[in-house]
Length: 290
Ligand code: R5P
Image 1 (cartoon, rainbow, N blue to C red):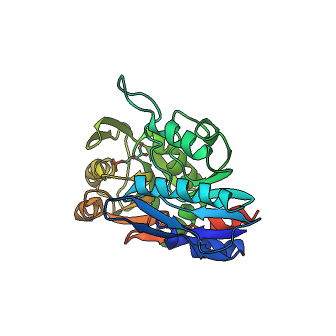
Image 2: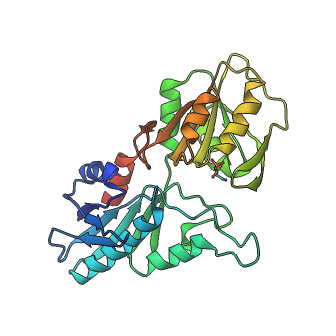
Image 3: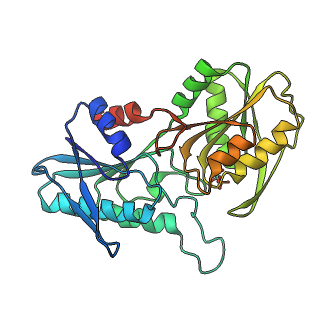
């Protein structure tokens, strides 16, 4: 097995290789002045099981093109099998045609990568209407979750935690995490009007005095879901509010906005960011070794 760090996966790939007890190399990637990508392997791939590690943040479309180039090239150079480890996999929130004429991006990207890869591992994919990765990919697919790592973090660092899921979709993370540490939990109701306009409601009585409200969600993108939730929770006077997510995208200065709203923020390191304190590399490495 050879673990390859692609440009958006290098922050984790070396540690993944260490935990998988496999050698590590990097894909050389360059960008031409016109925006085209150049990719090159500098190692022999003949007969190897090549594992590409690539996360999808920042310029996600470049990151996708890079995986396509790398996977096809690895096959041409004699790789026996090509696997993608995706700490964060994009486009999955567009899992249906919400308005006539829309592209169901998650399905299209899944189909594209399935034609180049043999296998894929995804950390906490945003599966909602599609219940399994088998609905997205036509290759062997493995879904991993950071729930136990988040639970461990809360147990070690936060006292008197009440776990809050900001919307129905977050119950997978919020409820499971709460059950793992025996904490009280509550799932709130969210209505989304647009990508930057959401409304979150606490529908039943919730007592937070003297407690730490820990909001757990899979993705923080614009931060509006959490900002709305924080606003409501502050009215209940908790001792502290902590937001924990798997994938901290933090677009449009979301991290600064959350801090300004008087919340502490913690993320897993599926995407590099200043609050990526929960390390998923061991879990990724062990899974591919198995
Ligand atoms: C959606 O259902 C997800 O679980 C997150 O709640 C959502 O993606 C967060 O997006 P934003 O930070 O832009 O509100």
